Image (cartoon, rainbow, N blue to C red; front, side, top):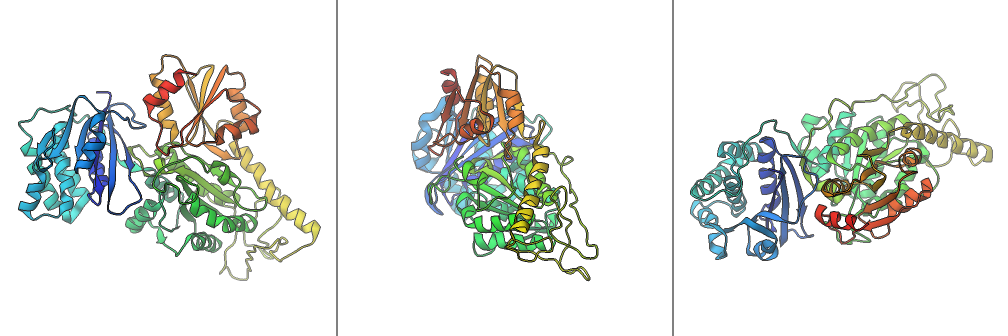
Amino acid sequence: MSGLSVVLGGKAGQGVMAAANVYGRLAGRSGYDVYIRNDYPSLIRGGHNYCEIRVSDVMAESSFQEIDILVCLDVNTFERHSDDVVSGGAVVVDSDFELDGVEVPVGSWIEELEAPEIVLNTGFVGVLAYLTGFDFEGLREVLRDVYGERAGINVEVAEKAYDYCRDMEKVVVLDSVGGGRPLVSGNEAVALGAVSSGLDFYFGYPMTPTTSILHFLAEHKDELGVEVVQPENEIAVVNAALGTAYAGGRAMAGTSGGGFDLMHEGFSLAGISETPLLVVVGQRAGPGTGVPTYSSQADLRSVVNAAHGEFPRIVLAPGDHRECYLHGGLGLNLAWRFQTPVLVLMDALLCESRTTCELPVDIVGVEEAVYGCEDGYKRYLDTESGVSPLCFPGTEDVVVKNSSYEHDEGGLTTEDPDRVRSMQDKRLRKQKGVEQWVSGDVGVNVFGDSREAVLTWGSTKGSVLEAVRMQERDFMVVQPTVMKPFPSSRLKEVCSDLDTIVCVEANSTGQLSGLFTEKTGIEIDEVILKYDMRPFRPRELKERLGGV
């Protein structure tokens, strides 16, 4: 089997995403690659929510529009998606809907059992599990793990639905192939990566698409050893993170592009005070409130140039869930190594999509910073590297100054021109160390070997790789993963003699394309953009690449 495409839809409040997560875990534990994309409006109740679930025996990196099985928790889902069901596919509906399809009286069972209405979703997962050939015992185990003490009624309804379908013809049989893997979101992966590098505190204000970092770390704070705090707004978030780092705690903050706008002053404060700071920014559709639950790649220029003044910063841009984990850990270590703010730039699709992924837990660890509390301690000691020894308040006989004003080596405010220039030079020297770290292969991923290349970044990487595999002609895929400092030398090495370069990104102005040409001097031959706030589909992208 090369791939099964399932769409499960209903209203907000019907547990659409919970049902997709249960089925995704079942498929993942059976050894399949799983990719789940959520699509939902900015509503708590009502509207139309749906999840695209891709199950494959090869790596699944995006979702398809074509549907093999459509599971309808309401009539609206049928009306919106039934035309996309492929020939030979199946549509699953409740018997009460009076629609053509695989009819199962889940709603009636819910009434008979006096079960909560939301358990309807689990009943339909039972139907889906049967139609795709999974053993019910595997589903029972997943339901118990997910719902714990609440599993009883969920198991009962799911089993009733599964047994009801036993005389039906299965759509496809997905036997367990072994080697089960965890199902994680990009937000969970970046959080776990930061934990692996010694994260002590997480600060966040609920704002799509990074809200689930807050929820995930709060739910698992005891086992992960992380204190989780929700301040009153994004300004308080960044200031709390800075105060925590000043006191010696490794801190991370999460927000959206709009929330990060409110953090700019604090971000600049991190620059002049040389306070280690890691911020995860999840891009969503703007400007303003925009289309708040959908994805975009329109904040690249904003983030790499964020905040006032000149100071070193690092911007990492993962393209898949494994890279989210790596960059969560790497970002925290870099913030403390160079004592400068670091951003992990993601987008809503990458933040919220879920996939089976082997996280590289043996690669990331805690990297110690430069410490020193000798007599006559100077917080901003002017060193060759620009990195001064850290010491924290509470250390005996040591005063640790932290200032938003320009200062001398001891942290005392100064407006003396020579000292101002000296401190600017000191901070900017750290940029040389950062650029040296980016030199070589770090910062750019290259897939394949061809004189024709597709340049892309972030979550668009998955659709590009799948589209390229569908092509009859060869394309090399080039993916920058560090946006500041931009890996110009490596990109020149890879791209300078190519016949064709096509840039694919999800914004309306070609931000990566412009940054690439600005930093390398190499012109892009064609730019393929999508800015309806929905992801590129591999087949759609295949056609567009074929016309280049």
